[in-house]
Amino acid sequence: MSVDIKPGQRTNMHWHAGYDFRYPLTTARTRWTTPDGLAIGVDLTARVPHWTAEETEHILENVGTTERVSILIELK
Image 1 (tube, one colour):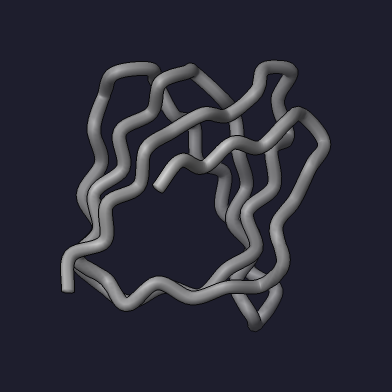
Image 2: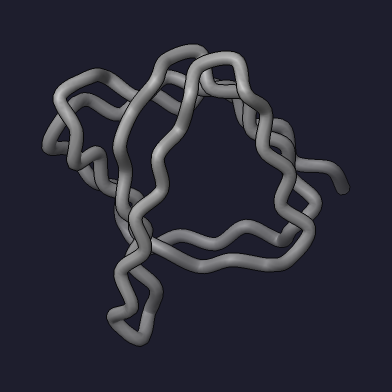
């Protein structure tokens, strides 16, 4: 699935089961906010893949000046 978030945009709270692979097509500065209000800055670099093994629930916000475009693959 493609995940495109323009600067200033944010997602609704959502959940990932874990075991997902992200491949950013653009460099972007984002922030994850967890249900308990913890905010975590996540800088993505184009063409540097990320693997997440654990389950996550968060809001994703693009706090930078460039569009965040990435490919998300969730393994079942």
